[in-house]
Each structure stands twice: as structure tokens, then as C-alpha cells.
Length: 269
Ligand SMILES: C[S@@+](CC[C@H](N)C(=O)[O-])C[C@H]1O[C@@H](n2cnc3c(N)ncnc32)[C@H](O)[C@@H]1O
Image (cartoon, helix red, strand yellow):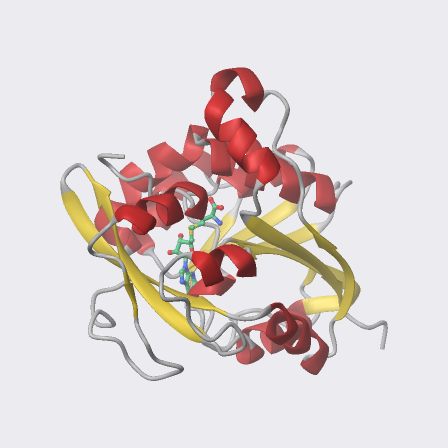
């Protein structure tokens, strides 16, 4: 990819395997040199949103999977956490949900506003911070491809639980732990939480992206520690409609792990 499809780890991880710019940060915690400017979605919001709109990984894999897991959302109050330019928010709204979108990037939210008009409340906020919502404000929280930007899921999951009504659900997609583990050689300690950084390039401009990988048990433990009950862990197949549009990528996605999906539930009391 000349440009690197920054829209999804399926492409981005592939790019990073070839990219000299990619780097295992070699740390279990602490700051990487790129911290000050990493993950600057504002810098490439328009290009990212355009790519995300039709990409195999997002449009034909991640979003259909989220919608299938969400099921009937009619009249449900949904928080789309890390909503980006709002493609999932729009689909949920179109299915009758009352959607609130939240993202740390004002640039991404500006595109979401353009897409969604005034139908959807949008809020600039960092998922590392307490959420600006009342207890029990939502029936469903969706978190598409955002948790892997966070080193510590604990405070964020605790906030998701707080804003969920009892029995409400969180549906989260993240880079599959196997993919995150195998992205660089030599491979890191699988059992440690470690970061890695690589460049996403759009229109000739490179932006460092920093991700946190965790072993599967650490993800499961994070939900359990917050009192969220895991209902399912899913490794879905891509939308069959993509077979003709992206024949090679389709076979790749259908045969290799890419993202992992969690459905978890807030306790009834
Ligand atoms: C890979 S994009 C996914 C966007 C959207 N969920 C989708 O699937 O189209 C990740 C999004 O997470 C947002 N993000 C990253 N770190 C965040 C944080 N700490 N708090 C809130 N949003 C964050 C980014 O700004 C970006 O819009």
C-alpha cells in the first residue's frame, strides 16, 4: 500500500510487517518516543474516514460483525465509544437506536457531524477519563477498534459499566491477540502487555500509530475485574458480499485471525 490503508489493522498490520518504520517498543509500560504525537487522528481524519467507508476490514468485516452482535437496537440508548467518523453510529441510528458518539479526535467527530446531522449527540472525550454521562445512561456501549489504543483497560471498562444500565451490554472489537503478537520479529513476551508503533501513511504523510497488545487472558481478566460478564468471544467471518469485490483480501480475512469481538454484560444489580 502506498498508502497505507490506515483504516484497519488487517491492512495496517500487513503494512507494518514490511515497514521499516514499524517498531516493537520493547517496553511493558512507560512512554515511547512517539508518545507525544502518536495516534493523531486529527492529522488524517478525512483520509482515514474515506478509507474506512469502503475498506474490506471495516465495511465488510468489522461493522457487519458489530451489527450482527448488536442485534435489535430499536429504541436502545447506544454509546458508540471511539466512534470516529460515525459509520457504525449511522447504521445503529438507522436501525432505530438513540445514539451518542464519543471520540478523542475533534477532526473525526467533525466528519461524524457532517454524516449524522443533529440526530446523534457527539462528544469529544478521552476514554482514559471519566465519561461525561450519568450512571445507567445507556443500554449498549459499542467500542469498535479503540480499546487497543489503551494500555490499561480497567478505568475505561469501569466507566462503561457505570454508564450501562443493569443488564446492558458492551460490544468491543480489538486487534486479535494472535495478530498483535506475531506482527514483529523477534516476537515479544506474549504474556506481557506491550506496545508497538508503526507508521500509517496517507497522501504521503506519515503518522505514528501506537497500539497496546495484551494476551487473551489479560483481556478476559480486565472484563472480569470490572464485574462485566463475558457472554461471547467471537471470531466472525467477513461479509460474503466482499468475495467479489476484494477476492484476495476476502480469502485472507476468511482464513486468518484479524479482530476479536467481545460481548459482555453489566450485572443486573
Ligand atoms: C480505528 S478508529 C475506529 C473508528 C470507529 N470506531 C470505526 O470503527 O469506524 C479508532 C478511533 O478511536 C479513537 N480513539 C483512540 N484513542 C481514543 C481515546 N483514548 N479516547 C477516545 N477515542 C479514542 C480515534 O480518534 C479513532 O477515531
